[in-house]
Length: 302
Image 1 (cartoon, rainbow, N blue to C red):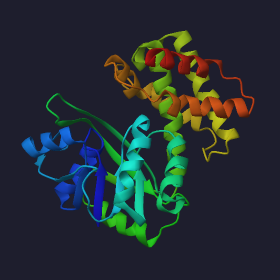
Image 2 (cartoon, rainbow, N blue to C red):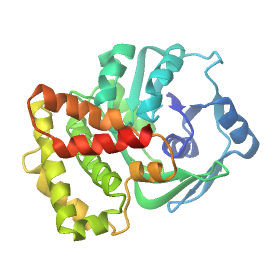
Image 3 (tube, one colour):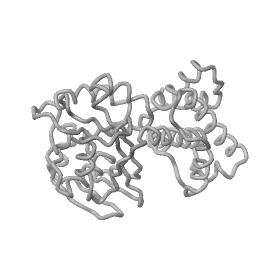
Image 4 (cartoon, one colour):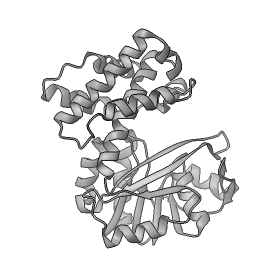
């Protein structure tokens, strides 16, 4: 199975690298600068699960190659429009598109560009970053990639993909409830990112503050109410389990959105919160805290 990984950053570089390490046919689609970097020093992964130095096949958008069987997409939402345009020559009518973006707003765009039957469900859980030299640094035991057909079926193509993903040094898991898992992650990460970026604080001090804890609870239940009005397939009482998870997180844990703000990098304000606020307005759900989170990010981005 020919696999194209879009980007060789903290997420794509890690999971694509683990597939290449196993021996799968993996190509990375990157910008010219990243191509020169990898051709010079290789794709280096430093991980608690074992380090590896790889020399992958690298292409840029200007190159012409045959379409791929699967395209692994882990770009940030604010790069999605440009990336989709770049990907069209590399996709056929049978190419599986596997997005790992957070949120849900990207799914409709991908359906329109590649056809809904070609777009799988996907998500990942990983703490990783690129250091100054371009090395992928992965720092926690969690390195999970979850994928599946959005209707939950166990198709021939998804079984072939499962075979390709099996036996790596990362956890690739086939799910029959991938859409539900995507919505659950969206609920968790939009709450976590929202409160930590709003308070400019790790999760620990927020939990310890009576006001912070109330905001965390209110944001979570506000977002879950919006999702239920959208008929999202989230579980009953999922809020309880997600709050438990937030209380069990390391005191110093920051969301990736908060870390991006601290570095002066772009954030996915519209993708995460603009989408939810539009849905809240259309269903007449009052969302002042969500508006404050969105406004905070928009002021930061201006």
